[in-house]
Image (cartoon, rainbow, N blue to C red; front, side, top):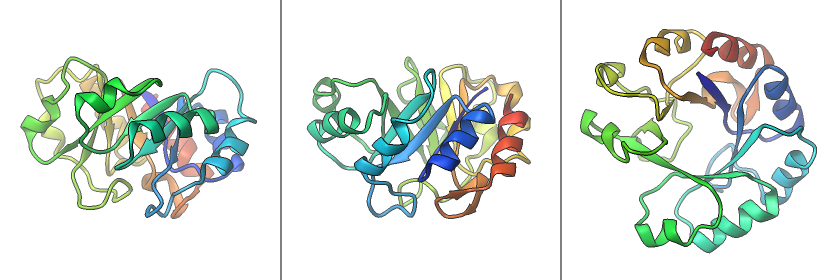
Length: 194
């Protein structure tokens, strides 16, 4: 499974995740989040990163023009759209994007089934709650285009391999404190996912 370490707030955490084998890093452009990072600070980190690593910008309740501008200004290579948006919104994007399904039921995980998407547990807040989905929902489902998030850590990620998820996304499960990654947890998580 491919791995994304989300909620990156420092160059040290970013390069440690890459050196541990992360395929993607997540930068949260949502001010209420404890893992929020400004576009300028994200750019300072991204500009120093090696090639072949996806730089994902996470957005909540913004206009398409904001997504385009912030991805361009920061150097992010993919926009993660963590809210319900209509087709006009997606048509206005000029950057690659990933839709997020905030699942409340088994039926929800089939949303956007024909495309790559991130599936997270629904909660009132957006992301970072560490709430885990009912993994049995994915029994007998084609998970090859799903990136699973929510409640993951180094102790449970290996158990997901049988589902053949495209990838896994973790934030709070590899932290020392909110917004600060624990390098040992990051390395264990990635090793266990691979």
